[in-house]
Length: 438
Image (cartoon, rainbow, N blue to C red):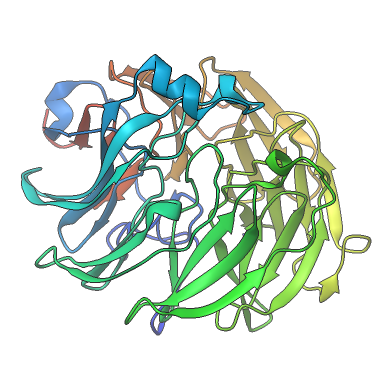
Protein backbone atom coordinates (compact mmCIF):
# COMPACT_ATOMS: atom_id res chain seq x y z
CA UNK A 1 0.00 0.00 0.00
CA UNK A 2 1.21 3.48 -0.80
CA UNK A 3 2.06 5.52 2.29
CA UNK A 4 2.01 9.29 1.84
CA UNK A 5 3.83 11.36 4.42
CA UNK A 6 2.05 14.05 6.35
CA UNK A 7 3.87 16.79 8.17
CA UNK A 8 3.15 19.02 11.16
CA UNK A 9 6.26 20.78 12.37
CA UNK A 10 8.99 18.16 12.14
CA UNK A 11 6.78 15.08 12.48
CA UNK A 12 6.13 12.73 9.56
CA UNK A 13 2.76 10.98 9.61
CA UNK A 14 2.06 7.91 7.49
CA UNK A 15 -1.34 7.23 5.95
CA UNK A 16 -2.36 4.22 8.06
CA UNK A 17 -1.97 4.94 11.76
CA UNK A 18 -3.05 3.71 15.16
CA UNK A 19 -5.46 5.96 17.04
CA UNK A 20 -3.16 5.58 20.03
CA UNK A 21 -0.29 7.15 18.08
CA UNK A 22 -1.87 10.25 16.60
CA UNK A 23 -4.66 12.72 17.22
CA UNK A 24 -7.56 13.14 14.82
CA UNK A 25 -6.63 16.77 14.48
CA UNK A 26 -7.82 17.68 10.97
CA UNK A 27 -10.43 16.79 8.36
CA UNK A 28 -10.30 13.03 7.71
CA UNK A 29 -7.69 12.34 10.36
CA UNK A 30 -3.89 12.28 10.48
CA UNK A 31 -3.30 11.39 6.82
CA UNK A 32 -6.28 13.31 5.46
CA UNK A 33 -7.63 10.07 3.98
CA UNK A 34 -9.96 8.75 6.69
CA UNK A 35 -7.73 5.79 7.61
CA UNK A 36 -6.99 4.39 11.06
CA UNK A 37 -5.71 0.94 12.04
CA UNK A 38 -7.94 0.20 15.03
CA UNK A 39 -11.13 -1.75 15.61
CA UNK A 40 -13.97 0.67 16.30
CA UNK A 41 -17.45 -0.12 17.62
CA UNK A 42 -20.01 -1.34 15.09
CA UNK A 43 -23.15 -1.22 17.28
CA UNK A 44 -23.46 2.56 17.22
CA UNK A 45 -27.05 3.62 17.84
CA UNK A 46 -27.27 1.50 21.01
CA UNK A 47 -27.16 4.11 23.76
CA UNK A 48 -25.57 1.57 26.09
CA UNK A 49 -22.41 2.10 24.05
CA UNK A 50 -22.52 5.91 24.27
CA UNK A 51 -19.84 7.30 26.58
CA UNK A 52 -21.56 10.66 26.34
CA UNK A 53 -23.89 12.63 24.10
CA UNK A 54 -23.74 16.41 24.22
CA UNK A 55 -26.39 18.67 22.72
CA UNK A 56 -24.90 21.34 20.47
CA UNK A 57 -26.09 24.78 19.48
CA UNK A 58 -26.66 26.29 16.07
CA UNK A 59 -26.03 24.45 12.81
CA UNK A 60 -22.71 23.38 11.33
CA UNK A 61 -21.38 20.54 9.23
CA UNK A 62 -17.76 20.88 10.24
CA UNK A 63 -16.40 17.55 11.41
CA UNK A 64 -15.19 17.17 15.00
CA UNK A 65 -11.44 17.08 15.54
CA UNK A 66 -9.67 15.68 18.59
CA UNK A 67 -6.35 16.41 20.31
CA UNK A 68 -5.00 16.50 23.85
CA UNK A 69 -8.30 15.42 25.39
CA UNK A 70 -10.35 18.06 23.57
CA UNK A 71 -13.00 17.86 20.85
CA UNK A 72 -13.36 20.96 18.66
CA UNK A 73 -15.93 21.88 16.03
CA UNK A 74 -17.62 25.02 14.70
CA UNK A 75 -21.23 26.10 14.53
CA UNK A 76 -23.34 28.94 13.23
CA UNK A 77 -26.27 30.52 15.06
CA UNK A 78 -28.62 32.08 12.54
CA UNK A 79 -31.70 34.25 12.46
CA UNK A 80 -34.06 33.41 9.63
CA UNK A 81 -34.54 35.80 6.77
CA UNK A 82 -38.09 36.46 5.65
CA UNK A 83 -39.29 35.16 2.27
CA UNK A 84 -39.27 38.75 1.06
CA UNK A 85 -35.65 39.26 2.16
CA UNK A 86 -34.62 36.01 0.49
CA UNK A 87 -36.39 36.93 -2.74
CA UNK A 88 -34.77 40.38 -2.79
CA UNK A 89 -31.28 39.00 -2.11
CA UNK A 90 -31.55 36.32 -4.79
CA UNK A 91 -33.29 38.44 -7.43
CA UNK A 92 -31.63 37.84 -10.77
CA UNK A 93 -29.58 34.88 -9.53
CA UNK A 94 -29.81 32.13 -12.15
CA UNK A 95 -29.48 29.39 -9.53
CA UNK A 96 -31.65 31.05 -6.88
CA UNK A 97 -33.68 27.83 -6.53
CA UNK A 98 -30.53 26.13 -5.19
CA UNK A 99 -29.88 28.70 -2.48
CA UNK A 100 -31.16 29.94 0.84
CA UNK A 101 -29.87 32.51 3.31
CA UNK A 102 -30.11 33.86 6.83
CA UNK A 103 -30.77 37.36 8.13
CA UNK A 104 -27.79 37.21 10.50
CA UNK A 105 -25.23 34.58 11.41
CA UNK A 106 -23.06 34.29 14.52
CA UNK A 107 -19.93 32.13 14.21
CA UNK A 108 -18.90 29.92 17.14
CA UNK A 109 -15.94 27.69 17.98
CA UNK A 110 -16.87 24.99 20.49
CA UNK A 111 -14.66 22.72 22.58
CA UNK A 112 -15.78 19.68 24.57
CA UNK A 113 -13.92 17.50 27.04
CA UNK A 114 -13.19 14.28 25.13
CA UNK A 115 -13.57 12.15 28.26
CA UNK A 116 -16.86 13.57 29.56
CA UNK A 117 -18.43 15.58 26.74
CA UNK A 118 -18.69 18.63 29.01
CA UNK A 119 -18.33 22.08 27.48
CA UNK A 120 -14.88 23.66 27.87
CA UNK A 121 -15.14 26.60 25.46
CA UNK A 122 -17.96 28.28 23.55
CA UNK A 123 -16.38 31.17 21.71
CA UNK A 124 -18.45 33.67 19.74
CA UNK A 125 -16.09 34.88 17.01
CA UNK A 126 -18.16 37.27 14.89
CA UNK A 127 -21.68 38.32 13.96
CA UNK A 128 -22.47 39.03 10.31
CA UNK A 129 -25.58 40.83 9.11
CA UNK A 130 -26.93 40.06 5.66
CA UNK A 131 -24.67 37.06 4.97
CA UNK A 132 -24.23 35.56 1.51
CA UNK A 133 -26.52 32.72 0.36
CA UNK A 134 -25.71 29.05 0.88
CA UNK A 135 -26.93 25.81 -0.61
CA UNK A 136 -29.53 24.19 1.70
CA UNK A 137 -27.20 21.17 2.02
CA UNK A 138 -24.40 23.45 3.17
CA UNK A 139 -24.05 25.45 6.38
CA UNK A 140 -22.31 28.64 7.44
CA UNK A 141 -19.92 26.47 9.46
CA UNK A 142 -18.91 23.59 7.18
CA UNK A 143 -15.07 23.77 7.07
CA UNK A 144 -13.48 21.47 9.66
CA UNK A 145 -11.01 23.00 12.17
CA UNK A 146 -7.37 21.95 12.35
CA UNK A 147 -5.52 21.56 15.66
CA UNK A 148 -1.77 22.17 15.75
CA UNK A 149 -0.25 21.80 19.22
CA UNK A 150 -1.99 24.30 21.47
CA UNK A 151 -3.62 26.17 18.56
CA UNK A 152 -6.83 25.46 16.70
CA UNK A 153 -7.60 26.99 13.31
CA UNK A 154 -11.30 27.72 12.73
CA UNK A 155 -12.15 28.69 9.17
CA UNK A 156 -15.41 30.11 7.85
CA UNK A 157 -14.46 30.82 4.24
CA UNK A 158 -14.80 34.43 3.18
CA UNK A 159 -16.13 35.37 6.64
CA UNK A 160 -12.73 34.86 8.24
CA UNK A 161 -10.19 32.50 9.79
CA UNK A 162 -9.36 32.46 13.50
CA UNK A 163 -6.44 30.90 15.37
CA UNK A 164 -7.39 30.21 18.98
CA UNK A 165 -5.53 28.99 22.04
CA UNK A 166 -6.80 25.52 22.95
CA UNK A 167 -6.05 26.32 26.60
CA UNK A 168 -7.76 29.66 26.99
CA UNK A 169 -9.98 29.91 23.92
CA UNK A 170 -8.61 33.39 23.27
CA UNK A 171 -7.91 34.59 19.74
CA UNK A 172 -4.21 34.53 18.81
CA UNK A 173 -4.80 35.97 15.36
CA UNK A 174 -7.50 36.31 12.74
CA UNK A 175 -7.46 37.01 9.04
CA UNK A 176 -9.87 37.17 6.11
CA UNK A 177 -9.37 36.03 2.52
CA UNK A 178 -12.29 37.23 0.45
CA UNK A 179 -13.87 35.13 -2.29
CA UNK A 180 -17.43 34.61 -3.53
CA UNK A 181 -18.26 30.98 -2.73
CA UNK A 182 -21.72 31.32 -4.35
CA UNK A 183 -23.29 28.64 -2.11
CA UNK A 184 -21.20 28.97 1.07
CA UNK A 185 -17.75 27.83 2.24
CA UNK A 186 -16.61 24.21 2.18
CA UNK A 187 -12.84 23.67 2.01
CA UNK A 188 -11.12 22.95 5.33
CA UNK A 189 -7.78 24.41 6.45
CA UNK A 190 -4.74 22.13 6.49
CA UNK A 191 -1.59 22.91 8.50
CA UNK A 192 1.74 21.99 6.92
CA UNK A 193 4.85 22.73 8.95
CA UNK A 194 4.45 26.38 9.97
CA UNK A 195 1.78 27.31 7.43
CA UNK A 196 -1.98 26.98 7.09
CA UNK A 197 -3.29 26.25 3.58
CA UNK A 198 -6.58 27.88 2.55
CA UNK A 199 -8.33 27.07 -0.73
CA UNK A 200 -10.35 29.91 -2.26
CA UNK A 201 -12.08 28.60 -5.40
CA UNK A 202 -14.95 31.04 -5.88
CA UNK A 203 -17.04 32.16 -8.82
CA UNK A 204 -15.21 35.48 -8.96
CA UNK A 205 -11.62 34.32 -8.43
CA UNK A 206 -9.77 31.08 -7.78
CA UNK A 207 -6.55 30.86 -5.78
CA UNK A 208 -4.75 28.93 -3.07
CA UNK A 209 -3.07 30.76 -0.19
CA UNK A 210 -1.03 30.04 2.90
CA UNK A 211 -0.90 32.09 6.08
CA UNK A 212 1.74 31.78 8.77
CA UNK A 213 0.69 29.62 11.70
CA UNK A 214 2.55 31.98 14.04
CA UNK A 215 0.83 35.26 13.19
CA UNK A 216 -1.73 34.68 10.42
CA UNK A 217 0.08 36.89 7.93
CA UNK A 218 -0.12 35.96 4.26
CA UNK A 219 2.85 33.75 3.34
CA UNK A 220 1.97 33.19 -0.31
CA UNK A 221 -0.93 33.32 -2.75
CA UNK A 222 -1.06 31.45 -6.05
CA UNK A 223 -3.73 31.87 -8.69
CA UNK A 224 -5.32 28.75 -10.13
CA UNK A 225 -4.79 27.85 -13.81
CA UNK A 226 -7.17 29.50 -16.26
CA UNK A 227 -10.52 27.72 -16.49
CA UNK A 228 -12.15 27.43 -19.93
CA UNK A 229 -15.75 27.54 -18.60
CA UNK A 230 -17.47 30.86 -19.23
CA UNK A 231 -20.18 30.48 -16.61
CA UNK A 232 -18.73 31.67 -13.27
CA UNK A 233 -20.70 28.98 -11.42
CA UNK A 234 -18.63 26.37 -13.28
CA UNK A 235 -15.39 27.75 -11.81
CA UNK A 236 -16.11 27.16 -8.12
CA UNK A 237 -14.82 24.25 -6.00
CA UNK A 238 -14.67 23.21 -2.33
CA UNK A 239 -11.85 20.68 -2.03
CA UNK A 240 -9.55 20.21 0.98
CA UNK A 241 -5.83 19.64 0.23
CA UNK A 242 -4.17 16.25 0.50
CA UNK A 243 -0.51 16.35 1.55
CA UNK A 244 1.84 13.70 0.15
CA UNK A 245 5.57 13.26 -0.40
CA UNK A 246 6.82 11.96 -3.75
CA UNK A 247 10.51 11.19 -4.29
CA UNK A 248 11.42 13.50 -1.44
CA UNK A 249 9.17 16.34 -2.64
CA UNK A 250 6.39 17.50 -0.36
CA UNK A 251 3.28 18.54 -2.27
CA UNK A 252 -0.26 19.71 -1.61
CA UNK A 253 -2.70 18.09 -4.03
CA UNK A 254 -5.71 20.36 -4.57
CA UNK A 255 -8.40 19.54 -7.15
CA UNK A 256 -10.55 22.39 -8.39
CA UNK A 257 -12.79 23.11 -11.34
CA UNK A 258 -11.22 21.50 -14.43
CA UNK A 259 -7.72 21.24 -12.94
CA UNK A 260 -6.00 19.15 -10.29
CA UNK A 261 -2.80 20.88 -9.20
CA UNK A 262 0.12 19.94 -6.97
CA UNK A 263 1.70 22.85 -5.10
CA UNK A 264 4.81 23.27 -3.01
CA UNK A 265 3.24 24.10 0.38
CA UNK A 266 6.33 26.07 1.41
CA UNK A 267 6.07 28.76 -1.29
CA UNK A 268 2.98 28.05 -3.40
CA UNK A 269 4.92 27.14 -6.53
CA UNK A 270 3.03 24.89 -8.92
CA UNK A 271 4.71 21.49 -9.32
CA UNK A 272 2.33 19.88 -11.82
CA UNK A 273 -1.18 20.24 -13.16
CA UNK A 274 -3.65 17.93 -14.90
CA UNK A 275 -6.71 18.93 -16.91
CA UNK A 276 -9.30 16.44 -15.58
CA UNK A 277 -12.24 17.66 -17.69
CA UNK A 278 -15.05 20.14 -17.25
CA UNK A 279 -16.11 19.16 -13.73
CA UNK A 280 -16.77 21.87 -11.16
CA UNK A 281 -18.00 22.33 -7.59
CA UNK A 282 -15.34 19.73 -6.83
CA UNK A 283 -15.61 18.66 -3.21
CA UNK A 284 -14.19 15.16 -2.45
CA UNK A 285 -10.67 15.09 -1.06
CA UNK A 286 -8.40 12.91 -3.25
CA UNK A 287 -6.81 9.68 -2.06
CA UNK A 288 -3.31 8.29 -2.68
CA UNK A 289 -3.11 4.56 -3.39
CA UNK A 290 -0.95 2.26 -5.53
CA UNK A 291 1.21 5.24 -6.42
CA UNK A 292 -1.71 7.22 -7.89
CA UNK A 293 -3.54 10.33 -6.75
CA UNK A 294 -7.22 9.63 -7.41
CA UNK A 295 -9.70 12.51 -7.52
CA UNK A 296 -13.40 12.87 -8.33
CA UNK A 297 -14.20 15.53 -10.91
CA UNK A 298 -17.44 16.84 -9.35
CA UNK A 299 -20.46 18.07 -11.33
CA UNK A 300 -21.80 17.64 -14.10
CA UNK A 301 -20.94 13.96 -14.64
CA UNK A 302 -18.51 12.86 -11.94
CA UNK A 303 -15.74 10.41 -12.71
CA UNK A 304 -12.57 9.27 -11.01
CA UNK A 305 -9.26 10.33 -12.52
CA UNK A 306 -6.03 8.62 -11.38
CA UNK A 307 -2.85 10.65 -11.77
CA UNK A 308 0.81 9.67 -11.50
CA UNK A 309 2.15 12.42 -9.21
CA UNK A 310 5.80 12.42 -10.35
CA UNK A 311 5.51 14.91 -13.20
CA UNK A 312 6.43 18.55 -13.72
CA UNK A 313 4.36 21.21 -15.48
CA UNK A 314 1.22 20.42 -17.46
CA UNK A 315 1.15 16.60 -17.56
CA UNK A 316 -2.45 16.23 -18.75
CA UNK A 317 -1.42 14.16 -21.78
CA UNK A 318 1.15 11.96 -20.05
CA UNK A 319 0.24 11.29 -16.40
CA UNK A 320 -3.41 10.22 -16.33
CA UNK A 321 -3.26 6.51 -15.49
CA UNK A 322 -6.96 5.62 -15.66
CA UNK A 323 -10.51 6.95 -15.46
CA UNK A 324 -13.65 5.38 -13.98
CA UNK A 325 -16.96 6.94 -14.94
CA UNK A 326 -19.33 4.88 -12.77
CA UNK A 327 -19.99 5.36 -9.07
CA UNK A 328 -17.95 8.51 -8.52
CA UNK A 329 -19.42 10.85 -5.86
CA UNK A 330 -19.82 14.60 -6.08
CA UNK A 331 -19.66 15.15 -2.31
CA UNK A 332 -18.30 12.24 -0.17
CA UNK A 333 -14.60 11.44 -0.43
CA UNK A 334 -13.38 7.93 -1.21
CA UNK A 335 -11.20 5.73 1.01
CA UNK A 336 -8.44 3.43 -0.21
CA UNK A 337 -6.33 0.67 1.31
CA UNK A 338 -4.48 -2.48 0.24
CA UNK A 339 -5.01 -1.83 -3.46
CA UNK A 340 -8.77 -1.25 -3.11
CA UNK A 341 -10.65 2.04 -3.32
CA UNK A 342 -14.16 2.34 -1.90
CA UNK A 343 -16.55 5.10 -2.93
CA UNK A 344 -20.12 5.85 -1.86
CA UNK A 345 -22.09 7.77 -4.47
CA UNK A 346 -24.31 10.62 -3.32
CA UNK A 347 -27.31 8.34 -3.94
CA UNK A 348 -26.07 5.40 -1.85
CA UNK A 349 -24.28 3.02 -4.22
CA UNK A 350 -21.04 1.63 -2.75
CA UNK A 351 -18.43 0.64 -5.33
CA UNK A 352 -15.08 -1.08 -4.83
CA UNK A 353 -12.38 -0.39 -7.42
CA UNK A 354 -9.00 -1.85 -8.23
CA UNK A 355 -6.82 1.15 -7.40
CA UNK A 356 -4.20 0.07 -9.95
CA UNK A 357 -6.48 0.35 -12.99
CA UNK A 358 -9.91 1.66 -11.92
CA UNK A 359 -11.75 -1.55 -12.75
CA UNK A 360 -14.84 -2.26 -10.70
CA UNK A 361 -14.44 -5.13 -8.22
CA UNK A 362 -17.86 -5.03 -6.60
CA UNK A 363 -20.97 -3.00 -5.93
CA UNK A 364 -23.51 -2.84 -3.10
CA UNK A 365 -26.62 -0.68 -3.14
CA UNK A 366 -26.77 0.72 0.40
CA UNK A 367 -29.47 3.33 -0.21
CA UNK A 368 -29.79 6.82 1.22
CA UNK A 369 -28.23 10.13 0.26
CA UNK A 370 -24.69 10.99 1.34
CA UNK A 371 -22.61 14.13 1.89
CA UNK A 372 -20.24 13.12 4.72
CA UNK A 373 -16.94 11.43 3.91
CA UNK A 374 -16.44 7.90 5.29
CA UNK A 375 -13.65 6.43 7.39
CA UNK A 376 -11.90 3.06 7.09
CA UNK A 377 -11.05 1.62 10.52
CA UNK A 378 -9.57 -1.83 10.98
CA UNK A 379 -11.64 -4.00 8.65
CA UNK A 380 -14.74 -1.80 8.55
CA UNK A 381 -16.01 1.19 6.60
CA UNK A 382 -18.34 3.76 8.18
CA UNK A 383 -20.79 5.70 5.99
CA UNK A 384 -23.12 8.42 7.34
CA UNK A 385 -26.15 9.53 5.35
CA UNK A 386 -28.06 12.79 5.47
CA UNK A 387 -30.99 11.33 7.42
CA UNK A 388 -28.70 10.24 10.24
CA UNK A 389 -28.16 6.58 9.42
CA UNK A 390 -24.62 5.24 9.82
CA UNK A 391 -23.98 2.03 7.89
CA UNK A 392 -21.03 -0.12 8.91
CA UNK A 393 -19.67 -2.28 6.09
CA UNK A 394 -17.06 -5.02 6.31
CA UNK A 395 -14.26 -4.60 3.78
CA UNK A 396 -14.68 -8.11 2.36
CA UNK A 397 -15.41 -9.29 -1.18
CA UNK A 398 -19.17 -8.81 -0.76
CA UNK A 399 -18.90 -5.51 1.16
CA UNK A 400 -21.19 -7.01 3.78
CA UNK A 401 -23.38 -4.65 5.82
CA UNK A 402 -22.56 -5.30 9.48
CA UNK A 403 -24.95 -2.84 11.09
CA UNK A 404 -27.36 -0.03 10.27
CA UNK A 405 -27.59 2.62 12.98
CA UNK A 406 -30.27 5.31 13.00
CA UNK A 407 -29.37 8.39 15.06
CA UNK A 408 -32.65 10.15 14.28
CA UNK A 409 -30.91 13.40 13.36
CA UNK A 410 -29.23 14.43 10.07
CA UNK A 411 -25.51 13.72 9.65
CA UNK A 412 -23.47 15.69 7.13
CA UNK A 413 -20.26 15.87 9.19
CA UNK A 414 -17.61 13.16 8.90
CA UNK A 415 -16.79 11.12 12.02
CA UNK A 416 -13.63 11.36 14.14
CA UNK A 417 -11.68 8.80 16.14
CA UNK A 418 -10.27 9.04 19.66
CA UNK A 419 -8.50 6.07 21.22
CA UNK A 420 -10.67 3.12 20.10
CA UNK A 421 -13.88 5.14 20.12
CA UNK A 422 -15.88 6.88 17.42
CA UNK A 423 -17.16 10.45 17.60
CA UNK A 424 -20.27 11.23 15.55
CA UNK A 425 -21.71 14.70 15.01
CA UNK A 426 -25.39 14.89 14.14
CA UNK A 427 -27.41 18.04 13.60
CA UNK A 428 -28.34 18.03 17.29
CA UNK A 429 -25.50 16.37 19.21
CA UNK A 430 -21.91 15.20 19.37
CA UNK A 431 -21.67 11.60 20.58
CA UNK A 432 -18.75 9.45 21.72
CA UNK A 433 -19.30 5.72 21.12
CA UNK A 434 -17.28 2.82 22.48
CA UNK A 435 -17.27 -0.98 22.56
CA UNK A 436 -16.52 -1.34 26.26
CA UNK A 437 -19.57 -0.06 28.14
CA UNK A 438 -22.33 -2.59 27.60
